Image 1 (tube, rainbow, N blue to C red):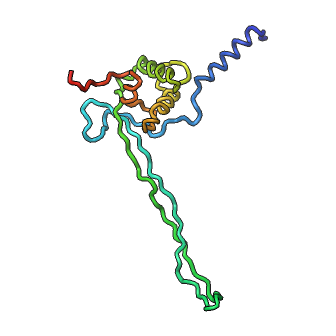
Image 2: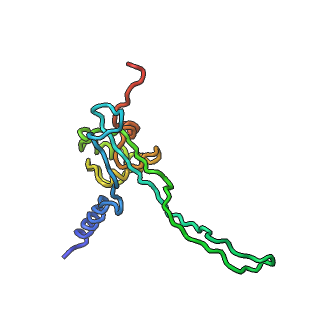
Amino acid sequence: MFTRTTLIPLLCAALLAGCDAPLPGASEPNLVQTLAEAPPGAAPGTCWGKVVTPAVIETVTDQIILQPAEVLSDGTVTSPAVFKTETRQAIVQERKVTWFETPCAADLTPEFVATVQRALQARGFFRGGITGLMDTRTRAAIRRFQAPEGLDSGILSLAAARSLGLVAVERTDGS
């Protein structure tokens, strides 16, 4: 039998546990982060992520006239026009591959991921517990953070890590 003093903490714990539940439909399609594959001209020892946006294809239906209508001079149609329907596929948007430099897997320690989570939380992109795991919530927050810069990926880019203040920015003044 539960008393009021034991029931309230149990309900609170159950509600808080739901905060870290996976987001529905928040799977990360086509996640590719690799050291084995890199874009042409990539520096050796660098790590890269890739976002592949599939082509957009639409079905186009055209009505083609095979025989025009026969019309008398007074406007009377003696024979209607004959049409043929043709259907074809048209590429509306070409397939696009976007490469971006990422922190390497060895750098993605639980401590680093926890720092990413805290940095995203401070900017209002991440809600939930700081776990140090690159989970669905963390990837969704990374995606929301990077989207305004044109990168629709849950893989942390090196540029995003730099803008969060988590990775040193290379100096350009030569010193």
